[in-house]
Image (tube, rainbow, N blue to C red; front, top):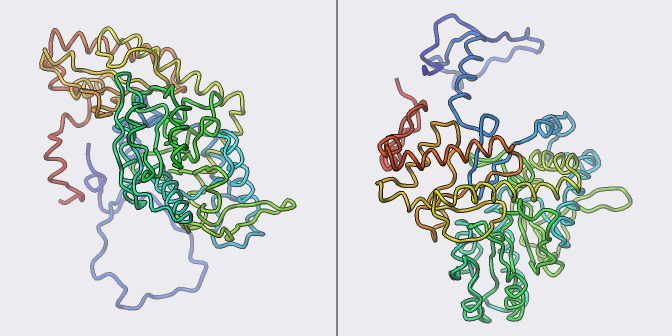
Length: 475
């Protein structure tokens, strides 16, 4: 496909500027260009066709199924986009006086109330910009909490089935991570937890369901062990899509949890943002929340900077406000009954896929999963086929690949999360395709090893792509 600079022809134009209606101002000489900018000259139809064709080349959630495990790549309803474009939201300035932004503050306050109710916790901050930022914020509050108590605790426990950002968040927050192993069922090893949970340990970061898609059945025992040693329990909320309306983090003993609004509540994500990672906490952690927090008094909403032991600001202004507008819209549209059905549908879809494919791909941990499941391609190795080959071949059928080679505790992992927004027909087409790929691996493995065949770009040399980055276009 041609670049827009290659389509360009001198004299073509796809815009018209309004007549000058203000006094003309000539830039000082030092600010004027010496050479004209090399901007493409194209007509409006050429501009539209170019960018529409580009969008077709890329895979995205509006185009096809995106079963990316651990990412909850659900469809983003367009009503969310319409609402966040309302002038009253889109044209706000973050430095406006409180009395002029009461609608925005009310929306944020109500969103916080909804999120707290979903997890049954007491306080909340909407500031964090994404999931890992939410982790950092929560564990920083853990640090401030123990500093306030004059308890110099050093460590945070991180299961080997946790999300990859957890150890980094621990380090950035001033603790050191200690790996907590899994048992033969893929769950937290209770005996190892008892060994590691000493007075030097500040708490446990737990992903539940974990990255194997398995619910920690011993969560109350885990909670009791951590709290008996004065520690705190943190829920990585990246997998919250499995819990809505079924269980609440506060009821399970968690002291803090982050939400991925860009996962669970259907706002766009990927490419580094924008996202939003609010953090809800138990009452003992409220004094350490980032400032400001949004409060309400007699129908007036205001920003409270008066928290005595706050960890300070973690994001400029209000946070990623328009992402919050999208999530608020989704929650109001879906309602309480809708939230219940989200998790039930996501769990049903995931189990339908995993149970349908367990005879074709290795299932490392038996039984039922939650909203996502992990298969392994290690049974294809006899044919010289790797999980990466399966992922590449899926692209030829119009599917994005699942997450591969994660979690690390599963060899040749295929981590599949369908979300609730996919229909039975889409799910069954994916299953049929995976079965066909399994058959190809046995009968014609070279088809997989050379895939993809139907994409705009064929298989890349991934090592070379990392080492020899090309970040700009040159003639």
